[in-house]
Length: 599
Image 1: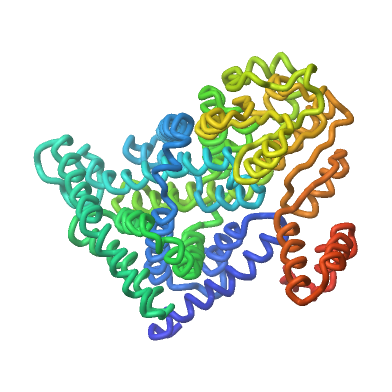
Image 2 (image 1 turned 90 degrees about the vertical axis):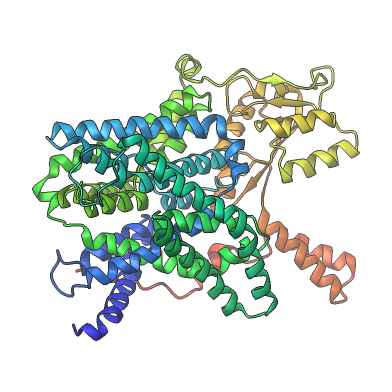
Protein backbone atom coordinates (compact mmCIF):
# COMPACT_ATOMS: atom_id res chain seq x y z
CA UNK A 1 0.00 0.00 0.00
CA UNK A 2 1.44 3.45 -0.86
CA UNK A 3 2.67 5.32 2.19
CA UNK A 4 0.70 8.42 1.16
CA UNK A 5 -2.62 6.55 1.40
CA UNK A 6 -1.79 4.22 4.28
CA UNK A 7 -3.93 6.19 6.74
CA UNK A 8 -6.94 6.21 4.42
CA UNK A 9 -6.66 2.49 3.62
CA UNK A 10 -6.26 1.57 7.30
CA UNK A 11 -9.27 3.61 8.43
CA UNK A 12 -11.45 2.35 5.57
CA UNK A 13 -10.51 -1.29 6.16
CA UNK A 14 -11.01 -0.94 9.93
CA UNK A 15 -14.45 0.63 9.69
CA UNK A 16 -15.71 -1.65 6.92
CA UNK A 17 -14.53 -4.89 8.54
CA UNK A 18 -15.66 -3.77 12.02
CA UNK A 19 -19.11 -2.92 10.66
CA UNK A 20 -19.58 -6.31 8.98
CA UNK A 21 -18.29 -8.42 11.85
CA UNK A 22 -19.93 -6.20 14.48
CA UNK A 23 -23.26 -6.72 12.70
CA UNK A 24 -22.72 -10.48 12.57
CA UNK A 25 -21.83 -10.55 16.30
CA UNK A 26 -24.95 -8.54 17.13
CA UNK A 27 -27.18 -10.86 15.09
CA UNK A 28 -25.95 -13.94 16.95
CA UNK A 29 -26.47 -12.32 20.35
CA UNK A 30 -22.90 -11.24 21.12
CA UNK A 31 -21.69 -7.72 21.94
CA UNK A 32 -20.57 -5.84 18.79
CA UNK A 33 -17.24 -5.34 20.55
CA UNK A 34 -16.48 -8.99 19.79
CA UNK A 35 -16.88 -8.21 16.09
CA UNK A 36 -14.54 -5.23 16.38
CA UNK A 37 -11.82 -7.38 17.95
CA UNK A 38 -12.27 -10.03 15.26
CA UNK A 39 -12.05 -7.28 12.62
CA UNK A 40 -8.66 -6.37 13.99
CA UNK A 41 -7.55 -9.99 13.72
CA UNK A 42 -8.76 -10.13 10.10
CA UNK A 43 -6.82 -7.02 8.98
CA UNK A 44 -3.91 -7.60 11.34
CA UNK A 45 -0.48 -8.96 10.54
CA UNK A 46 -1.31 -12.45 11.84
CA UNK A 47 -3.87 -13.28 9.14
CA UNK A 48 -3.53 -13.51 5.34
CA UNK A 49 -4.73 -10.83 2.95
CA UNK A 50 -4.83 -7.09 3.51
CA UNK A 51 -2.72 -5.91 6.45
CA UNK A 52 -3.48 -2.53 8.02
CA UNK A 53 -0.75 -0.21 9.19
CA UNK A 54 -0.35 -1.17 12.85
CA UNK A 55 1.59 1.97 13.77
CA UNK A 56 -1.06 4.26 12.35
CA UNK A 57 -3.80 2.17 13.95
CA UNK A 58 -2.14 2.46 17.37
CA UNK A 59 -1.97 6.26 17.05
CA UNK A 60 -5.64 6.39 16.09
CA UNK A 61 -6.34 4.10 19.03
CA UNK A 62 -4.62 6.61 21.32
CA UNK A 63 -7.22 9.16 20.24
CA UNK A 64 -9.85 6.55 21.05
CA UNK A 65 -8.42 6.15 24.56
CA UNK A 66 -8.45 9.93 25.08
CA UNK A 67 -12.07 10.26 23.96
CA UNK A 68 -13.07 7.17 25.94
CA UNK A 69 -11.58 8.56 29.16
CA UNK A 70 -13.07 11.97 28.38
CA UNK A 71 -16.49 10.31 28.19
CA UNK A 72 -15.89 8.52 31.50
CA UNK A 73 -15.04 11.88 33.08
CA UNK A 74 -18.17 13.50 31.62
CA UNK A 75 -20.37 10.91 33.29
CA UNK A 76 -18.40 10.73 36.53
CA UNK A 77 -20.50 11.87 39.47
CA UNK A 78 -18.98 11.96 42.96
CA UNK A 79 -22.53 12.14 44.31
CA UNK A 80 -23.58 8.90 42.60
CA UNK A 81 -20.44 7.21 43.88
CA UNK A 82 -21.08 8.33 47.46
CA UNK A 83 -24.64 7.00 47.40
CA UNK A 84 -23.40 3.45 46.81
CA UNK A 85 -20.10 3.82 48.68
CA UNK A 86 -20.97 1.15 51.25
CA UNK A 87 -20.81 -1.57 48.58
CA UNK A 88 -18.88 -0.05 45.66
CA UNK A 89 -15.87 1.44 47.44
CA UNK A 90 -14.71 -1.51 49.59
CA UNK A 91 -16.08 -4.08 47.15
CA UNK A 92 -14.27 -2.83 44.05
CA UNK A 93 -11.03 -2.17 45.94
CA UNK A 94 -10.80 -5.62 47.53
CA UNK A 95 -12.03 -7.35 44.38
CA UNK A 96 -9.22 -5.74 42.37
CA UNK A 97 -6.70 -6.55 45.12
CA UNK A 98 -7.70 -10.23 45.27
CA UNK A 99 -8.00 -10.57 41.48
CA UNK A 100 -4.57 -8.96 41.00
CA UNK A 101 -3.04 -11.33 43.56
CA UNK A 102 -4.70 -14.30 41.84
CA UNK A 103 -3.45 -13.28 38.39
CA UNK A 104 0.03 -12.54 39.72
CA UNK A 105 0.17 -15.92 41.45
CA UNK A 106 -0.79 -17.66 38.21
CA UNK A 107 1.90 -15.73 36.29
CA UNK A 108 4.59 -16.44 38.88
CA UNK A 109 3.74 -20.14 38.73
CA UNK A 110 4.75 -19.91 35.06
CA UNK A 111 8.14 -18.52 36.11
CA UNK A 112 7.48 -14.87 35.30
CA UNK A 113 9.24 -12.04 37.17
CA UNK A 114 7.30 -10.42 40.01
CA UNK A 115 6.91 -7.07 38.21
CA UNK A 116 5.50 -8.76 35.10
CA UNK A 117 3.18 -10.87 37.27
CA UNK A 118 1.78 -7.83 39.08
CA UNK A 119 1.04 -5.94 35.85
CA UNK A 120 -0.49 -9.10 34.38
CA UNK A 121 -2.69 -9.60 37.46
CA UNK A 122 -3.77 -5.95 37.48
CA UNK A 123 -4.79 -6.18 33.81
CA UNK A 124 -7.02 -9.16 34.67
CA UNK A 125 -8.72 -7.38 37.58
CA UNK A 126 -10.68 -4.63 35.82
CA UNK A 127 -13.93 -5.16 33.94
CA UNK A 128 -14.81 -3.43 30.69
CA UNK A 129 -16.90 -0.32 31.34
CA UNK A 130 -18.24 -0.48 27.77
CA UNK A 131 -19.45 -4.09 28.12
CA UNK A 132 -20.99 -3.65 31.59
CA UNK A 133 -22.90 -0.50 30.62
CA UNK A 134 -24.20 -2.17 27.45
CA UNK A 135 -25.39 -5.22 29.44
CA UNK A 136 -27.10 -3.09 32.09
CA UNK A 137 -28.76 -0.93 29.45
CA UNK A 138 -29.98 -3.92 27.43
CA UNK A 139 -31.55 -5.52 30.52
CA UNK A 140 -33.19 -2.36 31.83
CA UNK A 141 -30.98 -2.23 34.94
CA UNK A 142 -29.03 0.96 34.30
CA UNK A 143 -31.41 3.22 36.25
CA UNK A 144 -32.07 0.74 39.05
CA UNK A 145 -30.37 0.66 42.45
CA UNK A 146 -28.39 -2.36 41.30
CA UNK A 147 -27.32 -0.44 38.20
CA UNK A 148 -26.05 2.39 40.39
CA UNK A 149 -24.00 -0.07 42.43
CA UNK A 150 -22.47 -1.50 39.23
CA UNK A 151 -21.65 1.96 37.87
CA UNK A 152 -20.12 2.96 41.21
CA UNK A 153 -18.06 -0.23 41.18
CA UNK A 154 -16.82 0.59 37.68
CA UNK A 155 -15.94 4.15 38.65
CA UNK A 156 -13.78 2.89 41.52
CA UNK A 157 -12.04 0.43 39.19
CA UNK A 158 -11.49 3.17 36.60
CA UNK A 159 -9.99 5.52 39.19
CA UNK A 160 -7.62 2.81 40.44
CA UNK A 161 -6.48 2.09 36.89
CA UNK A 162 -6.03 5.79 36.12
CA UNK A 163 -3.76 6.09 39.16
CA UNK A 164 -1.94 2.91 38.15
CA UNK A 165 -1.30 4.29 34.67
CA UNK A 166 0.39 7.29 36.29
CA UNK A 167 2.45 5.45 38.91
CA UNK A 168 3.39 2.12 37.31
CA UNK A 169 6.27 3.17 35.01
CA UNK A 170 8.07 5.15 37.70
CA UNK A 171 7.30 2.71 40.51
CA UNK A 172 8.51 -0.33 38.56
CA UNK A 173 11.66 1.51 37.55
CA UNK A 174 12.44 2.41 41.17
CA UNK A 175 11.73 -1.12 42.36
CA UNK A 176 14.42 -2.36 40.01
CA UNK A 177 12.24 -3.95 37.37
CA UNK A 178 13.84 -4.24 33.97
CA UNK A 179 11.94 -1.50 32.13
CA UNK A 180 12.55 0.85 29.25
CA UNK A 181 11.02 3.73 31.20
CA UNK A 182 13.12 6.73 32.00
CA UNK A 183 15.36 6.31 35.01
CA UNK A 184 13.73 7.76 38.10
CA UNK A 185 15.53 10.33 40.21
CA UNK A 186 17.38 9.20 43.28
CA UNK A 187 15.69 9.27 46.65
CA UNK A 188 13.96 5.95 46.83
CA UNK A 189 10.42 4.79 46.34
CA UNK A 190 8.70 7.27 48.70
CA UNK A 191 10.32 10.25 46.99
CA UNK A 192 9.39 9.06 43.50
CA UNK A 193 5.80 8.34 44.49
CA UNK A 194 5.56 11.68 46.28
CA UNK A 195 6.99 13.54 43.25
CA UNK A 196 4.59 11.81 40.89
CA UNK A 197 1.61 12.50 43.13
CA UNK A 198 2.67 16.15 43.50
CA UNK A 199 2.71 16.53 39.70
CA UNK A 200 -0.73 14.93 39.48
CA UNK A 201 -2.02 17.11 42.33
CA UNK A 202 -0.70 20.29 40.69
CA UNK A 203 -2.35 19.36 37.40
CA UNK A 204 -5.68 18.49 39.04
CA UNK A 205 -5.51 21.61 41.21
CA UNK A 206 -4.83 23.80 38.18
CA UNK A 207 -7.77 22.26 36.35
CA UNK A 208 -9.99 22.63 39.42
CA UNK A 209 -9.14 26.31 39.87
CA UNK A 210 -8.52 27.56 36.33
CA UNK A 211 -10.02 24.90 34.08
CA UNK A 212 -13.25 24.72 36.08
CA UNK A 213 -13.91 28.35 35.19
CA UNK A 214 -12.14 28.73 31.86
CA UNK A 215 -13.51 25.63 30.09
CA UNK A 216 -17.23 26.23 30.83
CA UNK A 217 -16.73 29.93 30.00
CA UNK A 218 -15.21 28.99 26.65
CA UNK A 219 -17.93 26.48 25.81
CA UNK A 220 -20.67 28.92 26.84
CA UNK A 221 -19.35 31.61 24.49
CA UNK A 222 -18.94 29.11 21.66
CA UNK A 223 -22.49 27.85 22.24
CA UNK A 224 -23.79 31.43 21.88
CA UNK A 225 -22.49 31.52 18.30
CA UNK A 226 -25.16 28.99 17.39
CA UNK A 227 -22.66 26.94 15.37
CA UNK A 228 -22.91 23.26 16.14
CA UNK A 229 -19.65 22.39 14.40
CA UNK A 230 -17.77 25.08 16.35
CA UNK A 231 -19.09 23.71 19.62
CA UNK A 232 -18.12 20.16 18.67
CA UNK A 233 -14.69 21.42 17.65
CA UNK A 234 -14.32 23.23 20.98
CA UNK A 235 -15.18 20.06 22.91
CA UNK A 236 -12.64 18.01 20.96
CA UNK A 237 -10.01 20.74 21.33
CA UNK A 238 -10.51 20.73 25.10
CA UNK A 239 -10.38 16.92 25.36
CA UNK A 240 -7.33 16.42 23.15
CA UNK A 241 -5.61 19.67 24.19
CA UNK A 242 -5.83 19.00 27.92
CA UNK A 243 -4.74 15.37 27.44
CA UNK A 244 -1.69 16.27 25.36
CA UNK A 245 -0.84 19.31 27.47
CA UNK A 246 -1.03 17.32 30.70
CA UNK A 247 1.32 14.70 29.29
CA UNK A 248 3.81 17.28 28.02
CA UNK A 249 3.83 19.63 31.03
CA UNK A 250 3.13 17.36 34.00
CA UNK A 251 4.22 13.95 32.78
CA UNK A 252 0.81 12.37 33.40
CA UNK A 253 -0.88 9.99 30.98
CA UNK A 254 -3.17 11.03 28.16
CA UNK A 255 -5.88 9.00 29.90
CA UNK A 256 -5.71 10.99 33.15
CA UNK A 257 -5.61 14.33 31.33
CA UNK A 258 -8.70 13.45 29.29
CA UNK A 259 -10.51 12.10 32.35
CA UNK A 260 -9.93 15.32 34.33
CA UNK A 261 -11.04 17.41 31.34
CA UNK A 262 -14.28 15.43 31.26
CA UNK A 263 -14.83 15.89 35.01
CA UNK A 264 -14.32 19.67 34.67
CA UNK A 265 -16.94 19.90 31.92
CA UNK A 266 -19.31 17.54 33.79
CA UNK A 267 -19.92 20.26 36.39
CA UNK A 268 -21.17 22.65 33.70
CA UNK A 269 -24.76 22.75 32.46
CA UNK A 270 -23.27 22.18 29.00
CA UNK A 271 -22.04 18.69 29.90
CA UNK A 272 -24.97 16.88 28.30
CA UNK A 273 -24.54 18.71 25.01
CA UNK A 274 -20.77 18.21 25.13
CA UNK A 275 -21.28 14.50 25.65
CA UNK A 276 -23.86 14.28 22.87
CA UNK A 277 -21.67 16.15 20.38
CA UNK A 278 -18.54 14.18 21.23
CA UNK A 279 -20.32 10.80 21.32
CA UNK A 280 -20.26 10.02 17.57
CA UNK A 281 -16.52 10.66 17.34
CA UNK A 282 -15.98 8.87 20.65
CA UNK A 283 -17.81 5.81 19.33
CA UNK A 284 -15.96 5.92 16.00
CA UNK A 285 -12.50 6.16 17.56
CA UNK A 286 -13.46 3.60 20.21
CA UNK A 287 -14.15 1.19 17.34
CA UNK A 288 -10.69 1.98 15.94
CA UNK A 289 -9.27 1.34 19.40
CA UNK A 290 -10.80 -2.13 19.61
CA UNK A 291 -9.80 -2.91 16.02
CA UNK A 292 -6.21 -1.87 16.76
CA UNK A 293 -6.25 -4.15 19.81
CA UNK A 294 -7.55 -6.97 17.64
CA UNK A 295 -4.63 -6.41 15.25
CA UNK A 296 -2.34 -7.30 18.14
CA UNK A 297 -4.10 -10.60 18.87
CA UNK A 298 -2.19 -13.52 17.48
CA UNK A 299 -4.72 -16.34 16.94
CA UNK A 300 -1.87 -18.82 17.20
CA UNK A 301 -1.86 -18.24 20.97
CA UNK A 302 -4.98 -20.42 21.18
CA UNK A 303 -3.05 -23.27 19.55
CA UNK A 304 0.38 -22.66 21.06
CA UNK A 305 -0.75 -22.00 24.66
CA UNK A 306 -4.30 -23.37 25.10
CA UNK A 307 -3.71 -24.27 28.76
CA UNK A 308 -2.43 -20.79 29.64
CA UNK A 309 -5.34 -19.16 27.81
CA UNK A 310 -7.80 -21.36 29.73
CA UNK A 311 -6.13 -20.60 33.07
CA UNK A 312 -6.12 -16.85 32.30
CA UNK A 313 -9.83 -16.96 31.44
CA UNK A 314 -10.52 -18.89 34.65
CA UNK A 315 -8.57 -16.29 36.64
CA UNK A 316 -10.75 -13.53 35.18
CA UNK A 317 -13.99 -15.38 35.90
CA UNK A 318 -13.00 -16.31 39.45
CA UNK A 319 -11.19 -13.08 40.32
CA UNK A 320 -13.82 -10.72 38.89
CA UNK A 321 -17.16 -12.53 38.92
CA UNK A 322 -16.62 -15.04 41.75
CA UNK A 323 -14.82 -12.72 44.15
CA UNK A 324 -17.19 -9.86 43.25
CA UNK A 325 -20.26 -11.95 44.15
CA UNK A 326 -18.78 -13.06 47.46
CA UNK A 327 -17.80 -9.52 48.43
CA UNK A 328 -21.22 -8.08 47.53
CA UNK A 329 -22.98 -10.70 49.66
CA UNK A 330 -20.54 -10.08 52.54
CA UNK A 331 -21.32 -6.35 52.24
CA UNK A 332 -25.02 -7.27 52.69
CA UNK A 333 -26.14 -6.63 49.12
CA UNK A 334 -29.09 -8.88 48.11
CA UNK A 335 -27.94 -12.31 46.95
CA UNK A 336 -29.60 -12.53 43.53
CA UNK A 337 -28.64 -8.97 42.69
CA UNK A 338 -25.07 -9.75 43.74
CA UNK A 339 -24.94 -12.75 41.41
CA UNK A 340 -26.26 -10.78 38.44
CA UNK A 341 -23.97 -7.81 38.95
CA UNK A 342 -20.95 -10.04 39.51
CA UNK A 343 -21.74 -11.81 36.23
CA UNK A 344 -21.53 -8.51 34.36
CA UNK A 345 -18.06 -7.98 35.87
CA UNK A 346 -16.79 -11.38 34.67
CA UNK A 347 -14.84 -10.06 31.67
CA UNK A 348 -12.02 -7.66 30.85
CA UNK A 349 -11.77 -5.00 28.16
CA UNK A 350 -10.45 -1.57 27.29
CA UNK A 351 -8.45 -0.79 30.44
CA UNK A 352 -6.86 -4.22 30.34
CA UNK A 353 -5.73 -3.44 26.80
CA UNK A 354 -4.32 -0.09 27.90
CA UNK A 355 -2.44 -1.68 30.81
CA UNK A 356 -1.12 -4.44 28.58
CA UNK A 357 0.09 -1.85 26.07
CA UNK A 358 1.77 0.11 28.86
CA UNK A 359 3.44 -3.05 30.15
CA UNK A 360 4.86 -3.84 26.70
CA UNK A 361 5.95 -0.25 26.07
CA UNK A 362 8.00 -0.07 29.28
CA UNK A 363 9.42 -3.55 28.74
CA UNK A 364 7.72 -5.31 31.67
CA UNK A 365 5.34 -7.53 29.68
CA UNK A 366 6.26 -9.71 26.74
CA UNK A 367 4.20 -9.98 23.58
CA UNK A 368 3.12 -13.44 24.75
CA UNK A 369 1.76 -11.94 27.98
CA UNK A 370 -0.15 -9.31 26.03
CA UNK A 371 -1.52 -12.00 23.71
CA UNK A 372 -2.79 -13.96 26.72
CA UNK A 373 -4.55 -10.85 28.08
CA UNK A 374 -6.11 -10.05 24.71
CA UNK A 375 -7.17 -13.66 24.16
CA UNK A 376 -8.75 -13.79 27.62
CA UNK A 377 -10.60 -10.54 26.89
CA UNK A 378 -12.02 -11.95 23.66
CA UNK A 379 -13.13 -15.21 25.31
CA UNK A 380 -14.65 -13.62 28.44
CA UNK A 381 -16.60 -11.03 26.44
CA UNK A 382 -18.02 -13.85 24.29
CA UNK A 383 -18.92 -15.87 27.42
CA UNK A 384 -20.41 -12.94 29.34
CA UNK A 385 -24.06 -13.38 28.20
CA UNK A 386 -23.87 -17.06 29.19
CA UNK A 387 -22.39 -16.09 32.55
CA UNK A 388 -25.35 -13.79 33.13
CA UNK A 389 -27.79 -16.63 32.38
CA UNK A 390 -25.87 -18.96 34.71
CA UNK A 391 -26.04 -16.37 37.52
CA UNK A 392 -29.82 -16.10 37.14
CA UNK A 393 -30.24 -19.86 37.22
CA UNK A 394 -27.99 -20.18 40.26
CA UNK A 395 -30.02 -17.50 42.03
CA UNK A 396 -33.28 -19.28 41.19
CA UNK A 397 -31.83 -22.60 42.41
CA UNK A 398 -30.77 -21.08 45.73
CA UNK A 399 -34.14 -19.33 46.12
CA UNK A 400 -35.86 -22.74 46.14
CA UNK A 401 -33.81 -23.78 49.17
CA UNK A 402 -34.88 -21.51 52.05
CA UNK A 403 -32.28 -22.74 54.54
CA UNK A 404 -29.41 -22.18 52.10
CA UNK A 405 -30.88 -18.82 51.10
CA UNK A 406 -31.13 -17.65 54.72
CA UNK A 407 -27.52 -18.66 55.28
CA UNK A 408 -26.25 -16.80 52.22
CA UNK A 409 -28.60 -13.81 52.34
CA UNK A 410 -26.73 -11.42 54.61
CA UNK A 411 -28.78 -8.28 54.12
CA UNK A 412 -29.93 -6.74 57.38
CA UNK A 413 -33.47 -7.36 58.59
CA UNK A 414 -36.02 -4.87 57.30
CA UNK A 415 -36.64 -1.75 59.32
CA UNK A 416 -40.25 -0.63 59.71
CA UNK A 417 -39.95 3.13 59.56
CA UNK A 418 -43.64 3.93 59.93
CA UNK A 419 -46.03 2.51 62.50
CA UNK A 420 -49.24 2.66 60.51
CA UNK A 421 -48.59 -0.42 58.36
CA UNK A 422 -51.97 -1.73 57.10
CA UNK A 423 -52.97 -5.03 58.74
CA UNK A 424 -55.92 -7.43 58.75
CA UNK A 425 -57.88 -4.74 60.59
CA UNK A 426 -57.54 -2.44 57.58
CA UNK A 427 -57.92 -4.70 54.51
CA UNK A 428 -57.96 -3.74 50.84
CA UNK A 429 -54.84 -1.59 51.05
CA UNK A 430 -52.31 -1.12 48.22
CA UNK A 431 -48.66 -2.19 48.15
CA UNK A 432 -46.24 0.07 46.28
CA UNK A 433 -42.79 -1.33 45.38
CA UNK A 434 -40.32 1.48 44.67
CA UNK A 435 -40.72 5.18 45.39
CA UNK A 436 -38.83 6.83 42.57
CA UNK A 437 -40.33 9.24 40.06
CA UNK A 438 -43.03 6.76 39.00
CA UNK A 439 -43.78 5.39 42.46
CA UNK A 440 -43.90 8.83 44.06
CA UNK A 441 -46.55 10.00 41.58
CA UNK A 442 -48.71 6.95 42.34
CA UNK A 443 -48.20 7.43 46.07
CA UNK A 444 -49.26 11.10 45.85
CA UNK A 445 -52.45 10.06 44.04
CA UNK A 446 -53.29 7.47 46.71
CA UNK A 447 -52.56 9.94 49.52
CA UNK A 448 -54.83 12.61 48.04
CA UNK A 449 -57.75 10.18 48.04
CA UNK A 450 -56.95 8.82 51.49
CA UNK A 451 -56.37 5.27 50.19
CA UNK A 452 -54.20 3.27 52.63
CA UNK A 453 -50.98 1.92 51.17
CA UNK A 454 -47.57 0.70 52.26
CA UNK A 455 -44.39 1.28 50.23
CA UNK A 456 -41.22 -0.81 50.03
CA UNK A 457 -38.00 1.06 49.18
CA UNK A 458 -34.31 0.09 49.48
CA UNK A 459 -32.74 3.54 49.05
CA UNK A 460 -32.20 4.85 52.59
CA UNK A 461 -32.24 8.55 51.71
CA UNK A 462 -35.57 8.10 49.93
CA UNK A 463 -36.96 6.19 52.92
CA UNK A 464 -36.00 9.02 55.28
CA UNK A 465 -37.83 11.51 53.07
CA UNK A 466 -40.89 9.22 52.91
CA UNK A 467 -40.97 8.95 56.69
CA UNK A 468 -40.85 12.74 56.94
CA UNK A 469 -44.08 13.05 54.91
CA UNK A 470 -45.84 10.25 56.79
CA UNK A 471 -45.71 7.45 54.20
CA UNK A 472 -45.97 3.96 55.71
CA UNK A 473 -42.65 2.51 54.61
CA UNK A 474 -40.69 -0.71 54.83
CA UNK A 475 -36.95 -0.39 54.24
CA UNK A 476 -35.54 -3.33 52.30
CA UNK A 477 -35.52 -5.37 49.10
CA UNK A 478 -38.96 -6.78 48.28
CA UNK A 479 -37.39 -9.87 46.68
CA UNK A 480 -35.76 -10.86 49.96
CA UNK A 481 -37.68 -13.49 51.99
CA UNK A 482 -39.68 -11.84 54.75
CA UNK A 483 -39.76 -8.29 53.35
CA UNK A 484 -42.93 -8.59 51.28
CA UNK A 485 -44.71 -10.43 54.10
CA UNK A 486 -44.48 -7.32 56.27
CA UNK A 487 -46.76 -5.51 53.80
CA UNK A 488 -49.49 -8.14 54.48
CA UNK A 489 -50.19 -9.02 50.83
CA UNK A 490 -52.78 -11.58 51.99
CA UNK A 491 -55.07 -8.65 52.87
CA UNK A 492 -54.01 -6.30 50.07
CA UNK A 493 -56.15 -5.44 47.09
CA UNK A 494 -53.48 -4.04 44.76
CA UNK A 495 -49.76 -4.52 44.15
CA UNK A 496 -47.96 -1.81 42.15
CA UNK A 497 -44.38 -2.61 41.04
CA UNK A 498 -42.90 0.75 40.04
CA UNK A 499 -39.24 -0.31 39.87
CA UNK A 500 -37.57 -0.65 36.43
CA UNK A 501 -35.88 -4.02 37.06
CA UNK A 502 -37.86 -6.78 35.26
CA UNK A 503 -36.03 -9.56 37.13
CA UNK A 504 -36.99 -8.12 40.51
CA UNK A 505 -40.54 -7.68 39.24
CA UNK A 506 -40.87 -11.33 38.22
CA UNK A 507 -39.66 -12.52 41.61
CA UNK A 508 -42.01 -10.17 43.50
CA UNK A 509 -44.96 -11.29 41.37
CA UNK A 510 -44.21 -14.94 42.15
CA UNK A 511 -43.96 -14.22 45.91
CA UNK A 512 -47.17 -12.15 45.95
CA UNK A 513 -49.19 -14.68 43.95
CA UNK A 514 -48.11 -17.47 46.32
CA UNK A 515 -49.55 -15.50 49.26
CA UNK A 516 -52.59 -13.93 47.57
CA UNK A 517 -53.60 -15.47 44.21
CA UNK A 518 -56.36 -12.86 43.72
CA UNK A 519 -54.29 -9.71 44.22
CA UNK A 520 -54.50 -7.16 41.41
CA UNK A 521 -51.03 -6.42 39.98
CA UNK A 522 -49.78 -3.54 37.82
CA UNK A 523 -46.14 -3.44 36.68
CA UNK A 524 -43.74 -1.41 34.53
CA UNK A 525 -42.31 -2.96 31.40
CA UNK A 526 -39.79 -1.96 28.75
CA UNK A 527 -40.62 -4.19 25.78
CA UNK A 528 -43.35 -6.23 24.10
CA UNK A 529 -41.57 -9.44 25.13
CA UNK A 530 -41.56 -8.45 28.80
CA UNK A 531 -45.21 -7.44 28.59
CA UNK A 532 -46.16 -10.83 27.14
CA UNK A 533 -44.21 -12.61 29.87
CA UNK A 534 -45.89 -10.58 32.63
CA UNK A 535 -49.31 -11.29 31.15
CA UNK A 536 -48.56 -15.03 31.19
CA UNK A 537 -47.66 -14.65 34.87
CA UNK A 538 -51.15 -13.29 35.55
CA UNK A 539 -50.33 -9.59 35.80
CA UNK A 540 -53.49 -7.54 35.38
CA UNK A 541 -51.82 -4.54 33.78
CA UNK A 542 -48.30 -4.16 32.30
CA UNK A 543 -47.57 -0.60 31.18
CA UNK A 544 -44.79 0.44 28.83
CA UNK A 545 -43.60 4.01 29.38
CA UNK A 546 -43.04 4.85 25.71
CA UNK A 547 -46.46 3.48 24.76
CA UNK A 548 -48.29 5.47 27.44
CA UNK A 549 -46.43 8.57 26.27
CA UNK A 550 -47.59 7.84 22.72
CA UNK A 551 -51.23 7.49 23.86
CA UNK A 552 -51.04 10.81 25.71
CA UNK A 553 -49.52 12.60 22.72
CA UNK A 554 -52.05 11.00 20.36
CA UNK A 555 -54.93 12.22 22.54
CA UNK A 556 -53.54 15.75 22.65
CA UNK A 557 -52.95 15.73 18.88
CA UNK A 558 -56.55 14.75 18.20
CA UNK A 559 -57.90 17.42 20.54
CA UNK A 560 -55.60 20.04 19.00
CA UNK A 561 -56.94 19.13 15.53
CA UNK A 562 -60.55 19.76 16.58
CA UNK A 563 -61.67 16.23 17.46
CA UNK A 564 -64.16 16.34 20.33
CA UNK A 565 -63.23 14.90 23.72
CA UNK A 566 -65.45 11.79 23.55
CA UNK A 567 -64.29 10.84 20.06
CA UNK A 568 -60.62 11.31 21.02
CA UNK A 569 -61.19 9.16 24.10
CA UNK A 570 -62.78 6.43 21.96
CA UNK A 571 -59.87 6.42 19.48
CA UNK A 572 -57.19 6.25 22.18
CA UNK A 573 -59.12 3.57 24.07
CA UNK A 574 -59.34 1.59 20.82
CA UNK A 575 -55.57 1.85 20.45
CA UNK A 576 -55.13 0.68 24.05
CA UNK A 577 -57.34 -2.34 23.40
CA UNK A 578 -55.28 -3.57 20.49
CA UNK A 579 -56.66 -1.53 17.61
CA UNK A 580 -53.17 -0.74 16.36
CA UNK A 581 -50.29 -2.42 14.62
CA UNK A 582 -47.92 -4.09 17.06
CA UNK A 583 -44.19 -3.44 17.01
CA UNK A 584 -43.62 -7.00 15.80
CA UNK A 585 -46.12 -6.60 12.94
CA UNK A 586 -44.59 -3.28 11.91
CA UNK A 587 -41.09 -4.71 12.08
CA UNK A 588 -42.15 -7.59 9.84
CA UNK A 589 -42.92 -5.07 7.08
CA UNK A 590 -39.38 -3.72 7.10
CA UNK A 591 -36.92 -4.98 4.46
CA UNK A 592 -34.75 -7.71 5.96
CA UNK A 593 -31.22 -6.82 7.00
CA UNK A 594 -28.73 -8.57 4.76
CA UNK A 595 -26.52 -10.93 6.71
CA UNK A 596 -22.95 -11.26 5.36
CA UNK A 597 -22.29 -14.69 3.93
CA UNK A 598 -19.71 -16.67 5.81
CA UNK A 599 -17.32 -18.81 3.90
